[in-house]
Picture 1: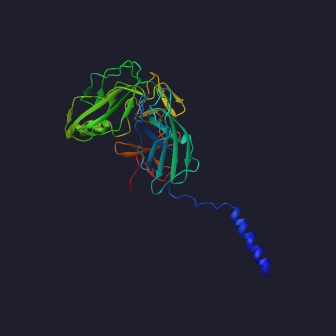
Picture 2: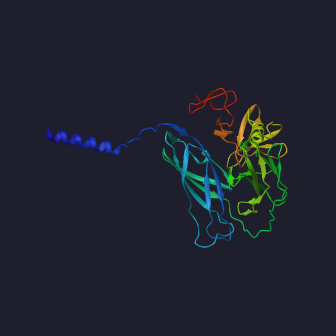
Picture 3: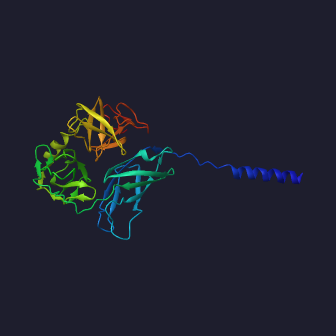
Length: 330
């Protein structure tokens, strides 16, 4: 009898050791996609170089971003910097089990997500930046004639023939109001950011590619009173709207980063909303369609998996949005 019991106990232990123990299901709100903004100062012909990775999401934080293939010598023309970015989910959030590299969208410095690794609370994103180009290229990226339209808060500058795009940033006094924004146009509508009185200025620089950027040029200071700020910002708020808000004739296009919308004049919307075929869509700093939560004029809006803004419904993570798409806070 003793031997039988001992044998049964041994068999039970062997079975338990052979069966994987499943972890408890993650609780909270799942994170099904992330958007990262990359700013790389790595240049061919120089050693080192800073890379910063940021996100506007409140669902997770960026704990670390490291260059995994930094050479002991100078970077060479054609080399591709590789990044390892570690994200940590905030309390009451977790990374969805089906997370893949297509769930990550990038903006800023050009690059490609090569793979991801996840647990419920941690997501590691591996990114390869585009090949570096010799900074000795003959590019004149100077930007001139920076001006304010004091009627509507639009910044403008002269076109630079060598620039493929421009980086802009708004300041109130010495404080940055916005992150570095990207546009292919020679103007940028800052009206939604001019919400308080103060001395406003903007900086702009021409960009050929991630390795060839011009020097920052700064505009004259423009003083905006409280009444003027209210009038300017209110003209861009209310229902969600922005420049280029009608769809016209255009086409949806997709590349390795994501979906974007090409208008009939070959332009595309950046850091703003656009109304296309009866739906509002939000496009990030690089012009790619955004899904999930979007903060705009101090309000939150939710874009579904197809990019269309939800209205008069409950979002997949359980929040009510009204007829204008804004989160209804109880």
